Image 1: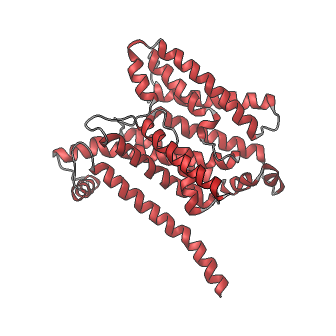
Image 2: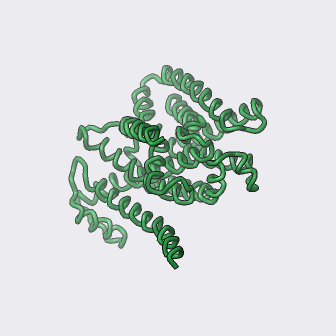
Image 3: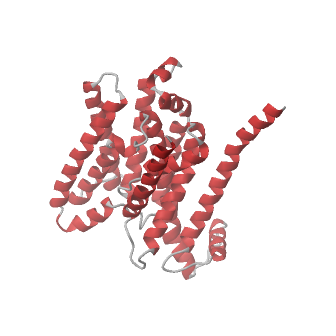
Length: 347
């Protein structure tokens, strides 16, 4: 009986933790839509949102600010943070590398390159909704993945993680050089491109939020369905093969899924670093290394982290606004150094 009670306690702990994560995410979102250049009391936030849900929204200034500006932005920030964190946690397990995240593949650089080319040269696709930056970012993310996997396959038939990481780093440097050339010839669009490459979700719409939600629902489900395989990868590829995991198929599936999700995030919010690198490490301290617990918790952790960074970007020098990518890089670098130091000290 004692063993049963203890095991039941261990099983119920993750459920309690997820409830706490969800409550923290909702509270963080409420604070983020409340605080800004114009403060809105939390009581009024609840009233406005409830009225909007029931179809009885008011026409006052607070309602206009909250429903048309802040709420869609916070939704996009939360979904982007959740997506990037999930990708980072999956990549760290897949590549068995604590420094890995979606950008390790070079997919983020490829998506950013596509978006920069679209902005610099005014490329659009007539007759297709969400053309231009979004379509180019997603296409270049796919193209980058195919190129990286193709080169990795030529160099190493087994597609080992070390080869993929090396090719990804080389491709990121190549994409960065092409991006620099595109910016050089961008003319009067240089300021826009520069701000976009720093990351920004200002001006986000409910349409953007719906796209992010659909991408996260599809890609996130595929990733979460392979938590058992990711646990095996985290121990080693030989271990994964020994328990019957199709290593190449699972690796390619996760890589494609991550590339799609990152491509969508980059196309909407620009280049936002360190979210997928740092957040899974923080969450891992609470849930442990088991991906069945880690990845769902990383969704909430990433959303909370990026919402707080976006709030800081909006209020530190208000009414001006900092690029969210600069804030995440600054905070993420400090947090990562602390985590790395603690892990080394613990060893």
